[in-house]
Every structure is written in C-alpha cells, then in structure tokens.
Picture 1 (cartoon, rainbow, N blue to C red):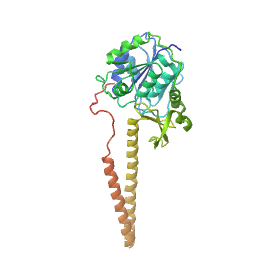
Picture 2: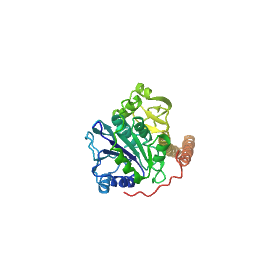
Picture 3: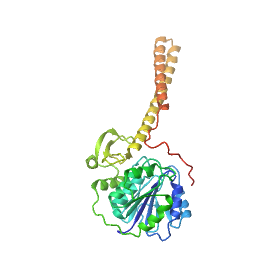
Picture 4: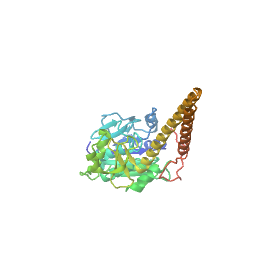
Length: 342
C-alpha cells in the first residue's frame, strides 16, 4: 500500500449533484481508493451510498472504523463522524468538530497527506464557507496534487474560491474535467516525500486523540485572548497562513470565519438565556407584589412591583438586541443558493 494512490474529495452544499456527476465518469477498474467527506446532518440517516452506487460503477459505502483500504472503492464519512486515514486502514472517529461540522474535510485531507504524502490527490467541490482549505494546504505541503472545481460553475462557490485564494492548486477545472485528471493522475509515480512538518503530524493526531497538552499546542500555535466558543477552553492561533485558523486544546478547530459564526451563535444563546431569566424574574416579582398587596404590605408590594418592571424592561432591551444581531460573513453576497437534488 506504500505506492497506493489516495483520492480525497471534500464538498458541502450542492455536493450530492456534483458527486453523482463525478463518480459516473470513473471507470470500474479505477486503480485507487476514493475517500469522500460530504457535510451531512448528524440527526438523520443518509442514503448517499445508495445514490452514488446507482450513479457510477465503483462500489460505495460508509466507511467503518478499522476497515482496510482497497483500490477501486469509494469510502464515505458517516454522518456525525470524522473519517481519517492511517497506513492501510481507515479510522472513523466521533472527534471534536472542525469548522463547526462533523464530518469535516480538513481531518481527512490532513491525515491522508501525513500518511500517504505525494500519493494523495485532494479535490474540492461545491460548498459554502471554507472547510477543506487547510487540508488542501497540507496535501500540497506533503507533495500531493490539488484539484478544485471551477467556482464559476459550482452551485455554491465559497469552498472552491477559498481553496483557490489560499492554496497553490494544480488544476481549476469544470466538474466534467475532474475525472480525466484523476484517471491520468493514478497512472503517475510521484516523487517520494520523506519529511513531514511537525505541525501537520501534531494536528493529524488531534482528531483521534482529542485533548492535547498546552505545551504541545504551543508548538503549533500562539495563545490568543479568546476562548473556544464550543467548550470554553483556551484557544491558539495556528501558524500564520491564510485563512487564519484557531484550535482549542480539546480539539475544536475553526477558520476565522467559522469562529466568528460560532461566537455569534454562542452570544445569541447566552442572550436568550438571559432573556428567559429576566422574564421569569419579572413574573416572580410581580406575583410576590400581588401577594404583599393582598396582605396589606403596600410598601413591599410597590418595591417588588418596581423591581418586576425593571426586570421586564431589561428583558425588552435584550430582546431587541437579539433581533438586531447580524450574521458575520466574509464571503461574497453574490453567491446565490441553488436547488440541490438528492
């Protein structure tokens, strides 16, 4: 398996249609294994294997933990699990979310790059935000090939645009041209790469190991004055590449855009809790005021009524703040969602 070509594919919104097209163009004797992360909702079952089995000639299935890698097969990351690669076999791990999703593209790409080096080809297809960009950088660093779907034809172009803007990609082509590049690629014998940067080896291990000692995190990043919005742990800025990336010591990972989105959601959640608490306080104080009034304790009734009114006023201020929150996005508003079929 040392000279086994590994094809890794990452996609999100619009990905089902794109994957159907791509797998339909691959021959049944394709001499490499294909590993796909399609962002999937964790709360429901997926029939993606059945869809892709009908679309092409290669067998497709959700990967299983510890499964041996075989040529001519397509392995999918299951819903709510990361898929990573070790030498000769697959790991399926319910590790920390990266870029707010699980499965995420970056863990697959990064682990493949560290394990199979120049024999890895990374493909980024349609999708929103920027998952996969850091993983594609890792593939290039380890001598692999990077292919990106032409953003002008992608249903959602944020993932392709982010990859092109931040990675020295080898090919930017329409979806219809990717299969032929892969067929030619697996016929090649790429130069062997022996040295893997320490930071990539450390990051590749985080997905399966979870909590990482702060001393090790210091070797791959710089502490920042922010906490992880997912768990509240310490946060490190990883390297100085673009896009900016952040990790906490429990394993959550973000680009700057996904970190802002996560912080925004955490802020809104905290505000809703504060709103509920203040409204409950207002009702409790109002009820206490009525009880004091019935007992003739008008002074206490007035005090509690005033405090009740104050709580409701503060609740109204927070309600208005929640309604005025704006989502923060670093991507172009020109990207228009299109209808996806499955």
